[in-house]
Image 1 (spheres, helix red, strand yellow):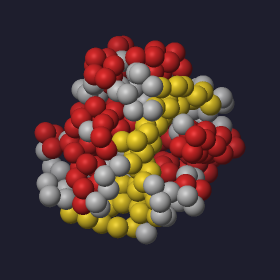
Image 2 (cartoon, one colour):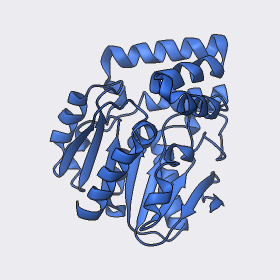
Image 3 (spheres, helix red, strand yellow):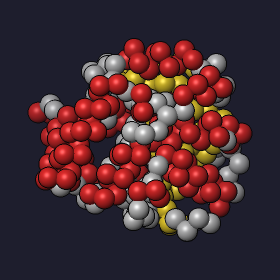
Image 4 (cartoon, helix red, strand yellow):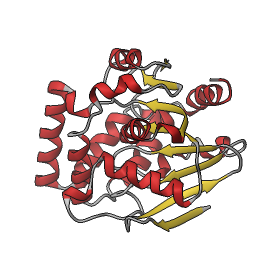
Length: 264
């Protein structure tokens, strides 16, 4: 069921709410929506209650006008308020890309809310990606300012799903991404690139699974390095997968997360 709630901070969030049982919170990537989880919802909701929101600035949720109303801390606050509104006191979180950043922020500030954490193709410090981060900011800013959202949406979709056999995934993701307003996308992107948890990663003791795609933008070694800093984490690598692993390798992805959720 698709629901819509206005939070106490006046942000309106649209979210999917399906199934019964322990709560699994699914947080999508930058410039996307809860549709990132289309290949997970049915199988997860057979055993769990799945909550999958559109983050602020995305999909059918509120899109604030000013840059200072965007950021990973603000998104995390939204999700905490949503959980409170739904009277949810404990959940497991699966965060993909930008959603993983939101999950990191939540586990640092509200560890009591989280029973298990699954981090997918993301990093705990987007403000410390070196030349890759600087290059990404430069290129995406230039594209957005000069050409708008559609060329960037196409570039991202092709990069995530380049194979001839992935044309349907590519087209679907392109159509979803090109619906972003330039302002909302840019504000979400630039504040993401300014964010990081730094040394606080060493404080995370929640059982954590880090999922790394073999062919992701950032190397597996980066995920292995930050996973070692956490007290209770392990890494699973999915071969022949790129950034959008929830979509390009859903069977393997679902098997791995269900095993972790069920057995730890």
